[in-house]
Each structure stands twice: as structure tokens, then as C-alpha cells.
Length: 104
Image (cartoon, rainbow, N blue to C red; front, top):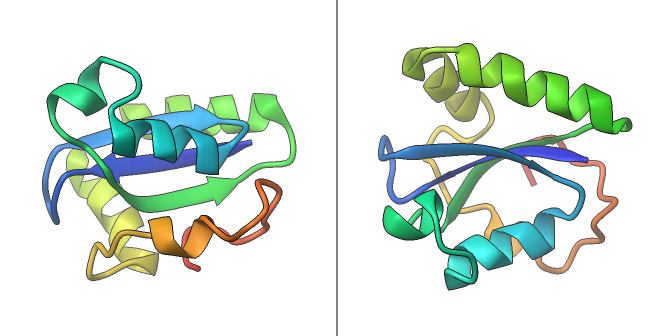
């Protein structure tokens, strides 16, 4: 399971989600396959993620992060991705069970 953040540009709108298949889910965001918040705001850039072994851990982490203010989320992103680069290229050749945490 993965907890991840999408944006449209550095310091842009943020979306925080959880998924069991990061490659599939980010692809859905990037291609606007599912209408909603990320589609509306064109959030196609994966800027942060972390992997969890258990679904309940990922869900608990997502809920905790959603309670944080923007400054904390920004600091979390910038800890491993200070330039807010799109991590998509680093995950598309990877297995959905990859073990990287936020920085590829």
C-alpha cells in the first residue's frame, strides 16, 4: 500500500491519496481517467510517496497527513524531493511492490 501526493506545479494544489497500486493510480491521475479533484485541478505530478506493508497502516498515515497543515506537507515533500520533481519516470519501470520511500 502507498500513501502519495500529487500536484500540478511546485507549491501548487496538493492531493493526498492511498492506493495498493501506485503505478496504476498515478497513471489514472495523469490521464484524467477518473473525474474529480485531481482532474479538475490538473494534478498530474507525483511529488511524494511512501510504502506501507499493511493497508491499515497506510490508511492511518493518510488520515494523519490529511490533518496536517500545508507547511507540514510541504516540508515532507521537500525532505526527499526539494525541487518537486515528478517522480513518475522513476516508478513506471518499477514493480508495484517497490520498496522506495518517496525518493527514487
